[in-house]
Length: 190
Image (cartoon, rainbow, N blue to C red; front, side, top):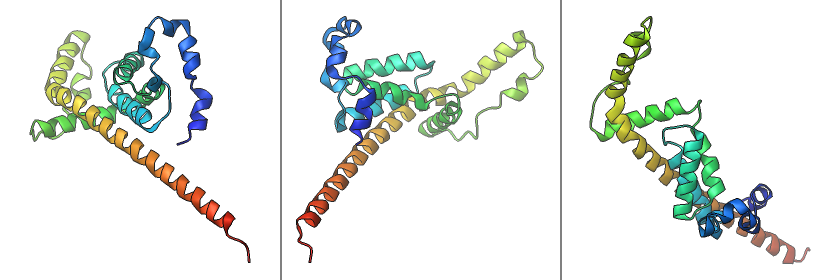
């Protein structure tokens, strides 16, 4: 993979180890897999980032969860944190809808769609709005509660294997090109 590109922007292992903030964590942040770019570490970082990206909450919560999971599984930490950005204000609604549908499928519910909220809350005061909103959340709660971890796990597994496969394909393709170049160079011109 394009390691040279990433190496320009990612800190080296020596620079990370010398950082006083990192030194407080001892060996937790100094493991070489957290900072090196190889197939297993990057694929694991993508998987961790995909999983942490669906944790409900804002970016700092997802970043922290990705960092903790990356340290626990000893996979590439910067990749894990960056990948969490796939869940953003533009993608969160389709992701949560997919999680809701996956939860319905797992629970063998045949419910149609997400119950509408906007029309039932229009023109109501806060005292009427809050109970209606809580009722709406409980109506979608169980499928969403089941679907979010399932979708996070599914995206993690798919992300892991796509990165592993893509990395291997790139390496084999590069080896073949290099071998072909050597063969062409060693063949005398007639």
